[in-house]
Length: 410
Picture 1: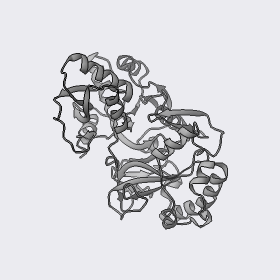
Picture 2 (picture 1 turned 90 degrees about the horizontal axis):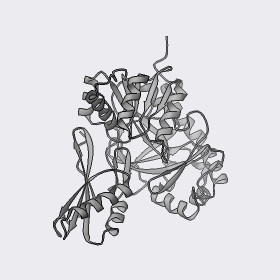
Picture 3 (picture 1 turned 180 degrees about the vertical axis):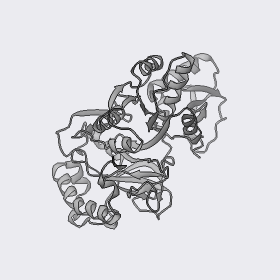
């Protein structure tokens, strides 16, 4: 009889897991600082041998993406934060920020999430995450293949061709953003193509809204979600218990007051910090910018790892749209490219189970050429398509909000 768990690490008692992490952590920190000038400077003067508990870990400085980007710009491509040059790929995520692919068959720890979602050896996976520039496609690709699945590297776009491929190859599983599976299913229905082979999915890169999950279930597709970032890989994942997300093995996760490194109480919402035991690209108290909260107790599925409530928004105004981050700095860049526009505000809503972004622009001119030019710059800067609406000067509120996420996550 096959095990319901990926391996025995998932069912260790909490004390054993914590002892393992904090027995290894001091040596890991010492190795990272010896091999990486970035980490050596960041943790200079700290007695790393004494970091043997969560309380001690909480005294270490936080590493924020903005600081990492600054260091990378000064010392390309990794800012001195890489500890082992034996890596297989380099990626560039929006920012820009560069990430290496670590060693091993499953360097981002995605196989465990696939297993919990019901994927199995021999399944064919339609992977609709991007393989271009960013690591999303490879995070899922390597994880699925490590589990023993075959992967069709669909990537993004070319929806009609993707549907044709599904009808021909008959994959049993889907990996991609939550919204795009519906786009594929609707396109197949319009083209009268059979894509009923898909029975399960693992999604990330955005929130899986309850109504969308229910729609997939009504079509006979079980969809689970995982929480992943380009810097770290799969941080947490759902199981069939459907009670929060289980933190992946080899990650120490903390929830802190946003903008600080101070842990909050159990159940309180705060910013996610992650320490990973990645010997190629160490991340120590890395601030993801995402919000969540610790769920008390253990999952009814039998896995004993720490749980979080899932993704609960951003600690800043950065938003994730169709799997891509959009930053306030990008909206400022659009404004600079159009001197005739006095103020911009990006709103994000849901229409027909899809993310929709609309750029509101204060402009004295209401010409279609202005809208077209803004739309082109919006696409060029964010790599996403969006609507543009022109409003009169002074019409937008002066509330400091550049990106307004109006999606309802409950």
